[in-house]
Structure formats: structure tokens, C-alpha cells
Image 1 (spheres, rainbow, N blue to C red):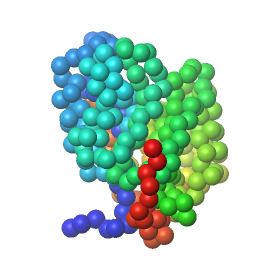
Image 2: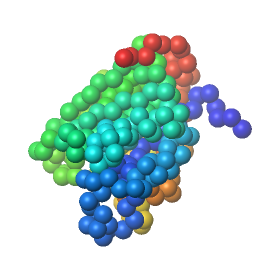
Image 3: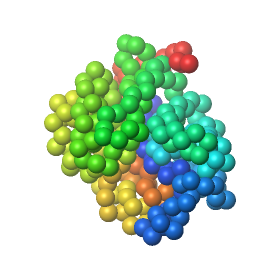
Length: 264
């Protein structure tokens, strides 16, 4: 059966630059893989691409823009090509030149009509967000992809910043590695004021080999209905991917169906 015309499939996945961590000890024994190339990285990315293929919009964290550790492969472009996404955008947040170019990315089947790169506040630099717009100006869909800080104080500053952005977006999907539990987001006054709610997956995304924490989330504005939300059992990273199917209001679905000129 084909999916309803008004349904949108989104996914967020921290891919750990193609490293398939399977145990805590491997953070030490395989830590060198964050700095040096290894033979299995591209094969692991191929498996990641197979998971992305069934979705319309994908947010990726811990992705490399092309450096020595990844054989100078732009992982966003590689995954977009392999999974059949005509549109992709990557933001480099930590640029170590030829050694590593660390960032976040959004892949989409819809052409984005606007892309804004945001630098998130925090005590240490290197965190960012991508704000993309889709559809006509009359009823755009906004997608805000993020990777938040581990430290609570920096993360709270970042959530305040994101809440201010969200106030200007009628139809918004906020997704990414939030590095905090759903209940912490649900009690955040800024997100509450912006009307955002967490799509309940009833599962945990970290660590992938024995999930005990839900760090990866999709939040949506009031006009978007969650049809299904789940954590996918595809352990190609230290995180598991989170997939959400959304039912869109007819006016928004019509806006996304209109022919538009993609931004450069």
C-alpha cells in the first residue's frame, strides 16, 4: 500500500563518522578511528544509507565533510547519492583542516527554498544548527537540525536560542542529537512556550548495543500530527536512528507539492 499523500517521514541519526562502536571499551580501543582511516568505514556508511533510503528528510550528526580520517570522502554527499536524496546541505562546526572536518547535515527529497546556518552558543565552540525551509512562502515547513552540547549549562543556552528561532516558525520540525532525555525537553519553558512537543518513541537510542537513554529526538509544532515514532534497530553507530512519520495538514501538504525554485 502506498503511503498517504499528506504523510512525511523524517529521521535523525548520529552516525559517529562511520564508526560502528559496539561496547563502551571501544571508545578507548577504537578511539583512533576518529583520527585515522580504517577499512570498514565506507562499508558501514553503505549500511547507514540503506536505512536513510525510506525517508523524506534526514538529519545527520557527527558527519565528516571530507578529511584524512575518512579518505577525504564527503560523507553527506556520499550518503545522499547512495540513498537517492537529490538535496543535501552540510555545516562544518569543527574544522581541523585535512585531519577532520566535523559537522551536521540534512538530506531531503524536497528542494529547500531557504537554508540558514546557525552557530549555537556555549562555553566551547563547535556546535551548530541548520534551519531549512520547504514549500511555498504562503505555508512553509521549517526543519531545524541540531547537535546539542553534553554540558547542561551550554545545552540550556542552546535550547533558549532554538526556542527563539522556533517562535518565528508556524510549522516546525526540530530534530537531532539533543544529549538529554525527553522529560528534560518536555519541561523546558522555552520549548513549551514555542508549542513544541516531543514525538514519543517509547524506546531508547543510546548506546546502540544496550539502549538505556533517549538522547535523540524529534519535536514538532502543534499543526503536525505524529502518526508513528520509533527507534530503529540498526546499530551502525554508538547511537540508534530515530524515525517519525508525520501527518501534515492539507494546506501544508499542498504547499510542499507546489513547484518551487530550490535555493543555491
